[in-house]
Length: 258
Image (cartoon, rainbow, N blue to C red):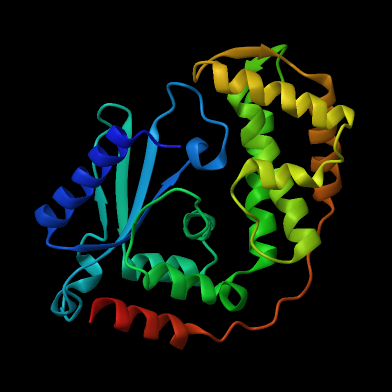
């Protein structure tokens, strides 16, 4: 849960961004470890939002050269930035994992009760399972090789490998976008198994530890990770059918900026 005082400050900054840039925020959420469910006491608040300019802003000769993000420096552990709706929908078309995860965040700060709901309705038509698997495989491999091959490793990096691997298992089993809450993903692990118990212990430590705390490598987790990465090395995927739904995205864009 987000403390009420923090939530009020986040909403204040969002409203200030609207005034400063003359935009309307359609959807704002928490991403990162607080949305995933394994934040540390000093984790940042990773606030992400989708915004729209007035309609005439998009009818411009120099549209392609106009800035399509709003970014601010981290202040008091609040990291806040957003994407223009056109950029967001273009990335949605490419099955951008960040945007798809934002749509599923359990922590919502702003919702116009239109944009995100309509975007979620398009997920089954737009989202590519194959692209999702390749993205999560790359994320898991990069973090494992970069951080978890030593005797002592950053505790939080285990979750930066476990979460994408479990997301792949979800994609393979259910053929739908994986949830971002870690507790939902770990339901794929047999309850009470050695792996499940190792994850439970790690979660408890993570929620008590500071962001950069180290831990001794955990053999049970490393074995699972190495086996999954080995299995995925030979993953070829299946031929994808053409996704001819750009007009649906165009319609969502038009109704959101009108």
